Image (tube, rainbow, N blue to C red; front, side, top):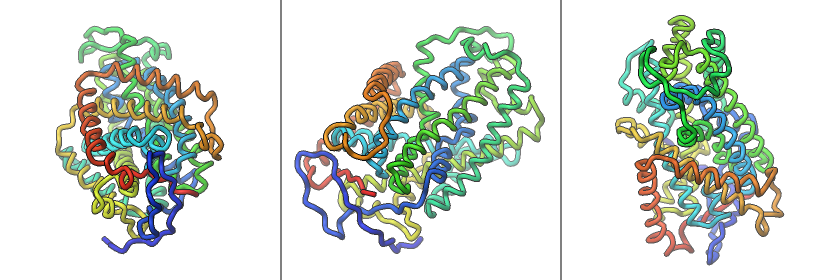
Length: 477
């Protein structure tokens, strides 16, 4: 590992709203700026890889099938529709605030530093936990070739993703792009096989039932509206990767134009790549019990042959590795930006903000990837529930920031502007608050406890040092 730091031009930083403006930093203290090196194509490849529709389809969607049955496609479609409004908010805020800090930079600037800090904690919670759990799914899809312990396989994927994350971002765009093609092919094959072996018509997509047992002779029950609402938190999670475009905005060429294009293009492509196979699986499952079991690999093998099943499994394994690479890239940028914005004691900020010779924040990358490998050996049964609550809460605060995005000088700033403002953020706030209220109490308590600890850190450390800590900056073009 080279410890030679890359010399980069210093940006002009615009601090978020604060009661007292801090003194301008010296050249040596000025925040470091990431190198702009990617356009819409590279940003879309990286962002789609974070959505990783194939690994989501094979790792997360089976859990939705087990609780929602034939209502899974409808629930994901509703979640994707909600995400259109969320994408509008991200696009407008991302072009106004093109920072590697992503959500927290946007919310801090528009809604205040405490709100931004809480968004940072929620986003960090999501991005630190999700990659290792998805990585552990690699073992299941390598099983046709080699049998591995899920924890060790997941740790290996996380370490490989960490090494890739240390490279130049442009190189990673091509690496993840190649993997992305393979996972889209896998999703396409599943869709073709499912439709070709359809056991029921398109009406099954709105015939909302789920099996009550594991056998074909067991009964069924109707899926209630409240169960769909509860499942929306996970549905938002499976389509939420488009937000990666905002994290990469500081490294995008012409971010005022390209961020919005990347966000909206990514959401559209990922929704299609995910929804079409889900609809095909719903229609092609041999019976409702098989659909509820969520064993997509077994259904693919039954529709085709063991050879095709093995090909699909290997493509999914590559998709999971791909997702790990992009998530490590994304997460390291968040940690890097928090140090640049002085969220931690000075020695920690200095170390986390270091850039390596490839222009990547190498210390932040290691601190994201290595603990992620360790998390593969931890029981994370509540992962999806906590992640769903965190994503919903994060989107809620982003919608509030979007509602405030046209106040004062921000209203005249050059940026992409969403249609139907302020109606879109107002409706989102109401819907997301309701979805949040319908989540299970343990997940709300876990997430609430973490947010409570973060609030104490804000009150006891950050707020008393408001002139020297948590100075959220926005590098200019």
